[in-house]
Image (tube, rainbow, N blue to C red; front, side, top):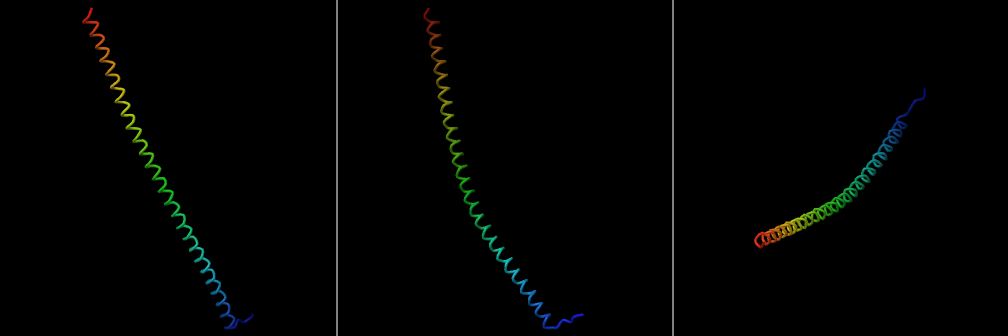
Amino acid sequence: MATVTENELRELTNLINNRFQELDKKIDDRFNDLKDDIKAIDKKLDIYIAKTDERLNSIDQGLADLKRQSEKQDNRLWVLISGMCLALLGILAKFALNP
């Protein structure tokens, strides 16, 4: 069997430790890159959320305007119907009172 000297063992442990340090550095770099990517995505999402909120608010405002317009038209319709009924009653009264 071959014997291993203490110097060779140190070299092996140093080599292993160096490899682990390199791996740790690569992993840390990758995590930092991922954190930066996540921050960029969060900013984009915040922008899209703000734009969506603005669009929803404008849609709500448009619906409120449509509701007000329909209420005005509904009032106009009832005024027209009431006027026609009064005119009809006037015509009927004229025929009934003036034979």
